[in-house]
Image 1 (spheres, one colour):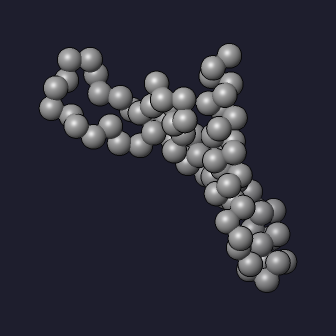
Image 2 (cartoon, helix red, strand yellow):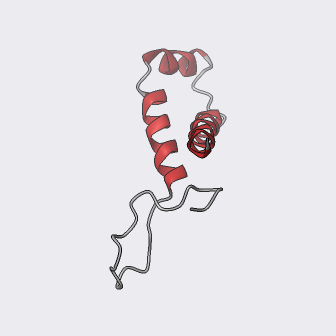
Length: 76
């Protein structure tokens, strides 16, 4: 397991020889789930609209922050 990414989210079964790409990392998977939850919040949309639709990238940063916290919690 890679400490930075958590390793692959969906690793190939043991003994499978022909898979060369592992696909998405566990960190990316956790971030995707976190952003899904963030964007499901109607208050977030209201906040963005109140800011004139301005978007600064903090949603992604927050999602990856949650993903990093989940990876850290797995180490315990």
